[in-house]
Length: 313
Image 1: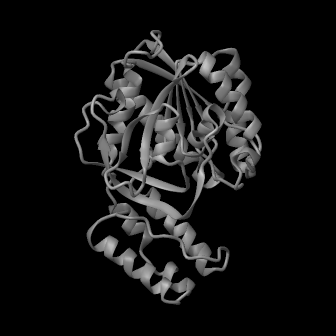
Image 2: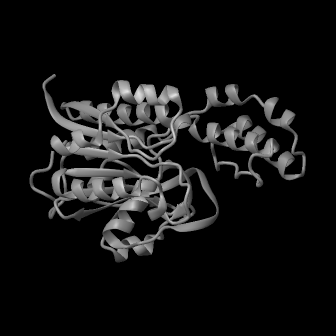
């Protein structure tokens, strides 16, 4: 197949999720390109300021390219992942200056930019001076979603659909609308807020993704396992939230029982060590897979509404 599109993937996730994040996003990009009968080449990049283990540093040195390569040879499309938030003020994140520079450059040079989670919140701060809000408790789980009629990014999706969320911060939907964004996908009951929104910024179609369509079937359970283990060993003071509808049936019932035991004061590492997390993750279904694939298929189609850059991919 002749390569028609060039994409850049800037992977800013911490080591524990670095390889999975790359795999998830590449899968959606290539599936979306294939659904449009288009070829696609993807270059991999990351930002400085994120602590890395020797093994991940070696992998980055072997397969990832400097951000400067993006500036020299702009892609048609750019994906910027989220990252683990470490600062209350997003502008104090260790890679903030690089992210600010990258987003500003991309809106002048890249046809469409898709930002995920923290980078979506960063874009709102940079372009609209809209601040994220720290939540009282983490939004985590699989939530019913409503696709907005006539929005091209959710074409061919019929309500209701589901999509994962996993975040400690939020930007109210009212703030997005006030800043001129079109909401493409949002929670049916507003429990998880908006998921996907877009607007034109300078010369690019900016896509904000606050949900996680790229997650695999076990991502939320894996996060929960990590966090409850930290809780029972004293590495974190508070019991993590159990992801809503992380799986189904008896497996979800078992997770609820574990959460209730921990909430009842049984802060016992044996409870977590003895829980069959591998089997539960193996049986989990990626119920949002058709939604994720359709969003990326639509994004890579290049069919934008009136007012978008005419030179779309």
